[in-house]
Image 1 (tube, rainbow, N blue to C red):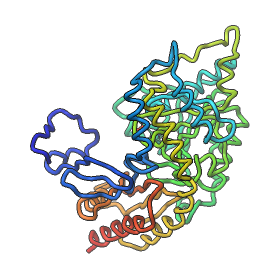
Image 2: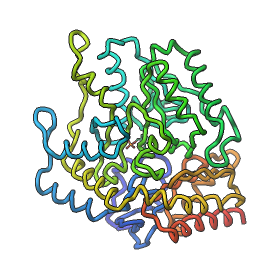
Image 3: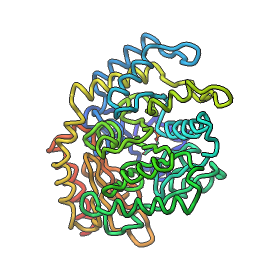
Image 4: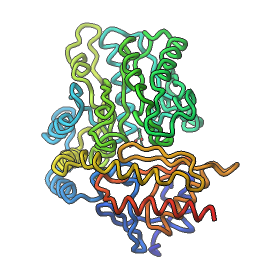
Length: 441
Ligand code: PMP
């Protein structure tokens, strides 16, 4: 640790970092697949930072775009005037978005993209004169960031506990895992339709569906343990939403930008939501930015509403469409395209899958779930110490094996940059396997 580092002032989020003072984990540089620590070690990045540097760290083309823009124009508000980069970034994003989703509202991160989408959904029904639709539905174990909207629709009670009251009128659907236990071990589970039927029944039991504005889901749940949608599940959610006039929002903050080997999970599963929330890979995490990509006619409804339904969508941030972020997003979309990174991820996925599943049968491994370049390795918990084994594996991987993994409860989550090579996949899974064996010894 540099002797001058003063640790008295930075409020370190989350408990894991409180070890920081005695044994700091400091990253000081990054390039491609690797971080460099302050003591000069190279760490293979198995998590793309925080599921976000999909094109690899410090991509030279993205760095150059940001540097040039920083010198040219640092900031311009987009309310009374505008600047071309915001328009260009929106077009670049719309160009890779699923068909029909082609209006983009920019914000600064994933949490804001969720709040923005929820507000669009609520206001959209009012614009159409359907003011009864004021309820929102999320799912148990859903994670949608830390804004007040996100913690309300998110299905993690602990994230809401000390901050109530949050949004009123929110319910959570039962989680597929709890409906069809043991259905989740081999590839995409088969019970999708059955589980989604439960969704419809529960929806009807909870409410008059004509009072529901939107349902928000992560197509693959990331932060709560890489939980894959059973076959047919998302399709059925779409059908139920259509039946009752409910907007379907996909939170693709993790699954967006090639993580599954397609631009978005919507493409991968062939299910079109009405809105997509995204962030992270939007700028390759180089500069913070989030966005909601919206169906054209939802946007148009605001523009064409007249009379008492004509409401302005009064929402926007100082940094909406920030020039540096916009420049970074344009460069990032260009890199994804020129390097064919989404196809590359799809081509790498089978090797990654094989390596992931080779961990099955190792000590403590309860389940391995993966899709594309995302993977969750669920470990047997230590009695009375939730998450302890996975966290210990994280520390050992970092300090002894030189690989960065992520843990969420008893699950090791992996989401490497899309540029990962087979040899690096071997390194990653060998390190995890070795640590598990050592923990057992
Ligand atoms: N939604 C999902 C699905 C996420 O995984 C995250 C962050 N991991 C967020 C929203 C929040 O994004 P941010 O941390 O950028 O606010």
